[in-house]
Length: 201
Image (cartoon, rainbow, N blue to C red; front, top):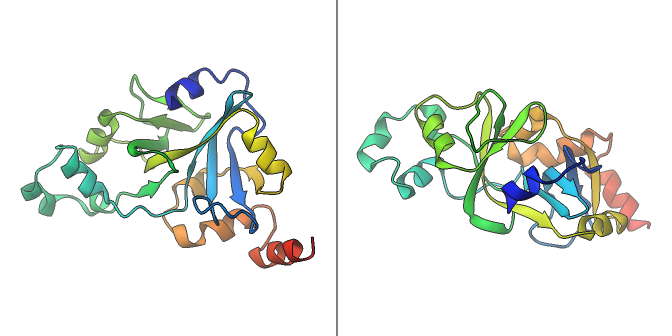
């Protein structure tokens, strides 16, 4: 479904390549204080990935689960592989892995998201990363965030989200705890100001 929505999105929607930043009043537990990178937005709906939520599963755990590595090989892995980021991408298809990455890696299954970032959801890229042939910048995400026709637009009109142009640096930054505040800073806003605004609405 994700690949189809990206390939068939047609003309870019106004939220393509944007960050969604959750407003304090957004009560959905899946999205509290979340920053979402929107990969596709069209009249058919929208999809993207939460980029500031940690995932308890490590990349090494995934390699073992996928039978791409045996336990005895783990001690020899480079530190970059052991610490490769795996995030909770969203509440939809949480057992499925996706890799957002710089465009210096490409396979037949890679889908361009914009001029600099692609999405790949096959084992090829996981093998490439493990073998040191992967993209320069990448993040693995389990699951994604999805909205049906008109759903996200309604949430925006109800002040559930702020939006701003995404930055590649923030997408791939591994300092998750401060991403929400730094995303707001792109708009010149602080969390305290948002809370005050909401309190006086």
